[in-house]
Amino acid sequence: MRTILKLGKQEHRFIDRISELSGENVYSCYQCGRCSAGCPMAFEMDILPNQLIRLVQLGEEEALIASKTLFICASCFTCQSRCPKGINIANVAEAIRYLAEPKGKDHFGPDEVPAELADELP
Ligand code: SF4
Ligand code: SF4
Image (tube, rainbow, N blue to C red; front, side, top):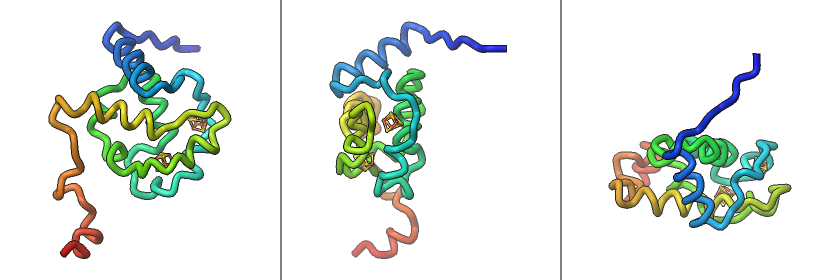
């Protein structure tokens, strides 16, 4: 049986805000995965670039704001160059960070640095 997903007003507001702030058409993503396959930072992400866009399409604001990926993305634009729809995920991540900042999630805390990297800090 096919399930039709219905989003609420809050989810629609979030998606519209992300689209407005980023200038990206997040609805055009069809989950081909080319962005994640080419992302040089994917190995450190808890949500892959294609998953990030899917969560935006679903209005999953809390999951996105909690994601480390927002602060791992290096804004290299490889995803945009590979995306058949030209979506720039760095712009989308920046828009989510902008909305996350008033909620106290505006940085990647020292306790979130992987142990193997923390050992290399001065
Ligand atoms: S490459 Fe573009 S269309 Fe494909 S999953 Fe990534 S964002 Fe979506
Ligand atoms: S801009 Fe961010 S998400 Fe896109 S390929 Fe670069 S590191 Fe990955």
